[in-house]
Length: 197
Image (cartoon, rainbow, N blue to C red; front, side, top):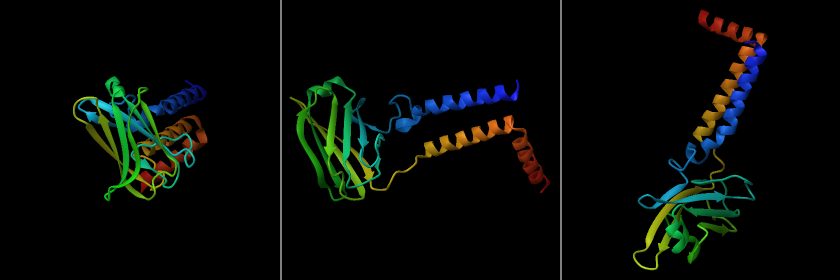
């Protein structure tokens, strides 16, 4: 196999990895089995949560960390169980540990299974917040679930993203090493000097 073919194959592998990067979303899983953006309402009954800050970070999704405060924030909840669509659901967001209410929506039924909550001014200050979700069935006990998030610490790069970027950098350098004689000589010379030390 000549260098041009090797380079083309290496490039195809890198492109495949780039397009499979969606597998890293929501905690690194293709499904929701290890999805960090879901939480349990009852045993084996889940709700998926995604947050957006469209003015500050267009087209980006967040979960446990919202980068900005005092900016429009949208919280989106998707029920993964059809029976919840028949129940009224109440939402509240509080600043912790004080328990000060930041947002409240009285119990309503959401037959589509998706709830969009708009916080026009977002959350007011840096810190920890708690989302309280209460399902109110026509009969029986109310179901309460809670999920915390941090706000105002800026956009952070996850450890998985850092590892993915490092892998791409290493793969690119390795392909360059295999396909460029001058780069290979330079690297081999550096390695030879290190071995002699």
